[in-house]
Amino acid sequence: MSEVPLTLTTGDGVRLRGRHLPAESDLAIVIAHGFSGSCNSPRARHIAATLHRFGAVVAFDFRGHGNSEGVSTVGDLEVHDIEAAVAFARSRGHSTVAVAGFSMGAAVAVRHAALFGG
Image (tube, rainbow, N blue to C red):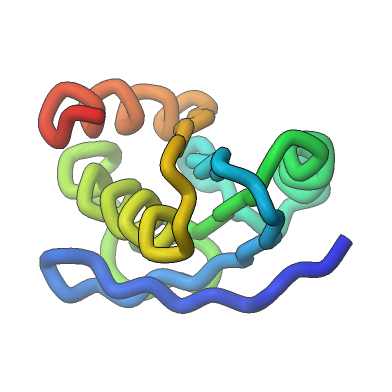
C-alpha cells in the first residue's frame, strides 16, 4: 500500500497531520478516529488498509491528538478537522467522499454532515 504523509490546515488555522492512501477512484473515505486515538495506531492502520481496497483513504489525527497541533475540544471544533480532510479529498478529484467515524469521530462525522452538508 502506497501512503503519503499529509498536512492539512483547518478553516480555523489548526495544522493536522495524517496519511493519504491514494487511489484512482471516484470514492475517497475519510477516517475519523475516536478520542485519544490516532491515525497511526495499529487498529486505524488496519482499517485504512481494508478501506483502501474500495477507494482512496484520508486518515488524520484530530486536533490535540497524535501528531496534530491544537487542543481537543472533544468534538466541538473537530468538525473543522473533518471538513479539511473532506476538502482535501475533493481537491484530489474524488466526487464521492464518505466519512467513517469511530466513537468521538462518529459523533463529529454526524455533526459535520449536519453543519456542512454533503
